[in-house]
Length: 497
Ligand SMILES: Nc1ncnc2c1ncn2[C@@H]1O[C@H](COP(=O)(O)OP(=O)(O)OP(=O)(O)O)[C@@H](O)[C@H]1O
Ligand SMILES: [Mg+2]
Image (cartoon, rainbow, N blue to C red):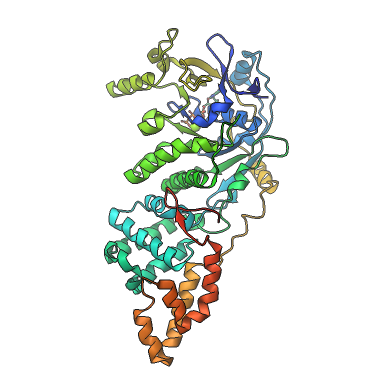
């Protein structure tokens, strides 16, 4: 067991060698694990993930350097690690492997991880593509038209087909026409092509990630640890990495019901390389993210950011944290001294600790811990020696990885991609129908010049002769999404899908 008194996440030993824990009931108040490189952030994350899993809380975490995946293997403590365990006589250290499922956006080293264009919504997609305001406006109009015409946007090919549709039939834009410029639309198309080259096409499609699969608890009562293998992704396409995590956050926010007081969170997310999440995000998105982070805790989701410096997070996020674990920092330059001071000031002072001084003295696997008390108010800063994980410190062997994937309870469903009828297919069919009808009946040809009008896109379309043909196709598509499309806080479609 890694929880003490069943209510605490055991972190390690305080300065007097006594156990120190964090209230599980308040673990939905988010946290931060910070510190210079090599000071023990990933090991602390591993320790915490184990404690959450033991407490029956599902975990989603990214593995950036390939060293976190060791959580799926039994630990074999030796040397300094064994010494540290021995220094904590009260620690019930039981080497064990944790239940892990591996996910991979590229679909190569884990279950393919996908979402759809519709679910991501225009705001996050704009962030992913790093759009200018006018390009973002074009994307908005595209989503508007898709919503109006009931065109499902699942993969990149759907979005590209839709943009071609707008170019060829600008009248479908209706009142949004003022927002659309050909130049920006072309630039948007080029950015989509770049995204495709980075492997973005594998992120979009079906089957999309089902939140239920992430929230499910294992038969032995432990929370499953969903590990995003991000080693290639973070380097090759950091924006895809960041935007996917933001999507996951917003999706959880939109889909999960409000939860009253609970004895533990439903799910915790560990966002490593957290600076990537907020770097260069447009203000509109940043504002909404801050709001989502604030509100998601009432849905039982705790977010733990892992990054080198607290300054990598917006102040509004820092202000909400219920847990700060600060590993050692170096401060040589005047600028570093100044930021050190800011980090120290983030903790509630403890008369027994010179926070500023201790920050530079902390050894590997040691940290300053600022938690919250039972009432939720900040507790005094404490020095903590983090208890070593019960799983392996270090990577998995390739054979172990393969075995993990082979025995995953999720194996099968995500491995088979499918491509149901969506914007691309509908628009292609429509175009074909139009070329067939045009020469045959002059009346239909003139009509197709004016219709479908933006105002009644779908009715006009269904009214004409050709409409009969794809009526059923369209109805099928429209029925797949909720009848009334409601876009949520981040522009993704909300409601039951
Ligand atoms: N709590 C701990 N108990 C025992 N050893 C530890 C502990 N924390 C860290 N170590 C040792 O320090 C090494 C580096 O730790 P870790 O990989 O967590 O650093 P990091 O801060 O994540 O570094 P980076 O910024 O490079 O990702 C570990 O491989 C391990 O050997
Ligand atoms: Mg690390």
